[in-house]
Amino acid sequence: MNRKTEIGKRGEDLVCQYLVKNRCKILKRNYREKFDEIDIIARSIDGTLVFCEVKTFFGKTDSGLGLIPEDNLTKAKLKKIRRACEMFVGKHQDLVKEKTGWRINCAVVIIDEDWNNYEIRYYKNI
Image (cartoon, rainbow, N blue to C red; front, top):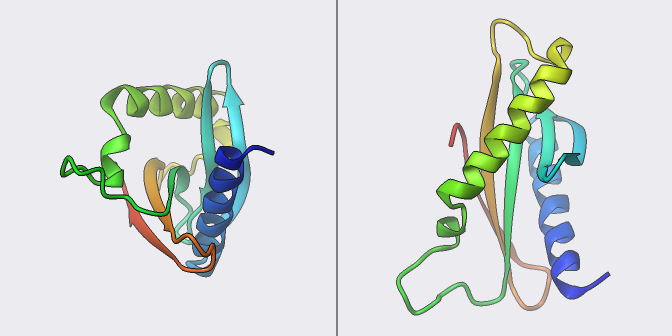
């Protein structure tokens, strides 16, 4: 496993722990739909199907350009995520509850160089 993959997996593991602590049930991880991928698919406590995009950063996040890690979720990336979610829902309509539907969330994970300290910033309905 290369370093980038290791960092990404650690971030997804931390977000899964966060979701479980917040009473979500993890249904799938790293779901692939043709050329697109959904990092985490979960069910929230109210029954909503949640698709979660995870952006993980290791060490310093200051680019010197005034950008924040959240800026890495571009319009093009969001379009690809949305397309994958729509394809998933089309194939798994039984997982979508009529009253609650589905949504796309984003989790930004910032991991310190020591691998023990981290911060999660979680955004609903992106």
